[in-house]
Image 1: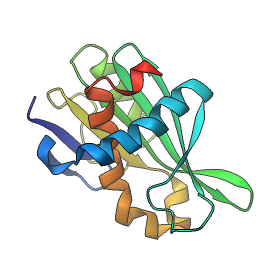
Image 2 (image 1 turned 90 degrees about the vertical axis):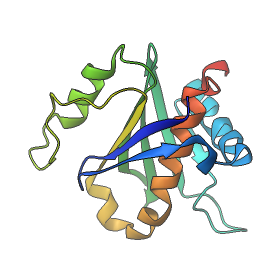
Image 3 (image 1 turned 180 degrees about the horizontal axis):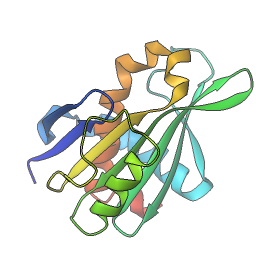
Image 4 (image 1 turned 30 degrees about the horizontal axis):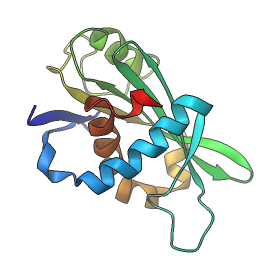
Length: 159
């Protein structure tokens, strides 16, 4: 597999994300977080944290068969506030259901809930908390792609 579709539902942005764009070291680092999140329900995210600081971002993840559902959270005032919810569909199985679920309750999304991209894909939607941490938008797209590649390559499933 040479690329996946990366879709940002709120903006309408869609692009092919090629595997060589993501370093193996970065995928392996995100894979550790993914395995911890799948095992424990939530894990700290190191990407985006400044050196020498306590991580304020967390990854919440679960799967249904081949499909991954994840939410990236930010600790704001001692509460985990959702910034982004995303899904990864490595194959067509389960892709339609999760694609439509990402659209539920969101009339502002420009994508048709019945127009599902070809697998593999990852799709993200912003949550209300993103307005409290716009700086996170500078790295979230990269993190989404790394998480998608870790899942597609079967890494997070082993933990």
